[in-house]
Image 1 (spheres, rainbow, N blue to C red):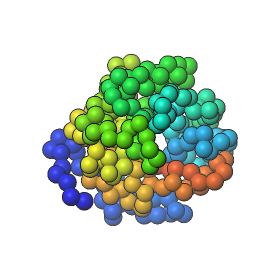
Image 2 (image 1 turned 180 degrees about the vertical axis):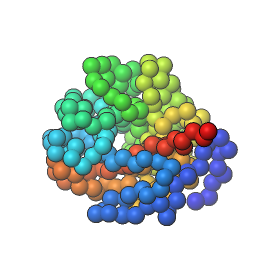
Image 3 (image 1 turned 45 degrees about the vertical axis):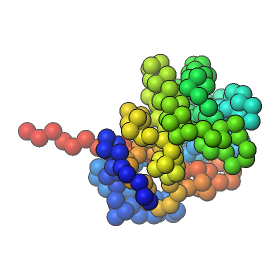
Amino acid sequence: VWMTPYENVPASALTREEFRTVDGIPVYTGSAFAAELGVDVSEHQWGVDWQAAAQKLDFAYVRLGYRGYTEGGLFLDPWYETNITGAAAAGLDTGVYFFSQAVNVGEAIEEAEFVLENLKGHRVNLPVIFDWEHVEEEARTDGVSEQTMTDCAVAFCRTVTNAGCDAGVYLNRKLGYYGFDLSRLSDYARWVSVPGDFPDFYYACDFWQFTFEGTVPGIEGNADLNLRFIPVSEPEKH
């Protein structure tokens, strides 16, 4: 990867030697973090047996909604209410993400307000995630600049944090290295999609999506699986 690292964005402290794979799941063996296993779901997983899933998982990210990539309408994921309620009832830590196709700051703020309105009455204790992605088909976001993408991410996250919630950004290698200006997003959680047995992404991350083809009890078909890295505080020295 050819890129100039941002000086104010921490590099990853994870090393390949700290990971081993057990039954297809990467296991972190280092001491700097506690690692938890989670899934992210949307309407594509249909009905999830959350009580069964909770036997394997620690947390769940649920798609709250999305913006259409042709005409730009805002839509609630048809399974959002069922999934967020079921995951929380099963005792999992929960978070939501919104699939953005914002083309300007105004739309990003509108998306954040849509999310906040639909979060009312639900227990969510993980960051609200801004998920802006390029669409392979012809989309209204074609031609959106890297600066505009970052402006939208900042506007979304700032709106969410101003409402008292934590916020974060989902990205893959391309968006992380050549898309978003990560120096402007350092105050927010980072969820990276880097499929494989090691998160070989230069910058530090809070969540790592390591496969799109995982298996989880209670979920039919493939599932996206993730690890969450929680820093372990060193004991105070006396």
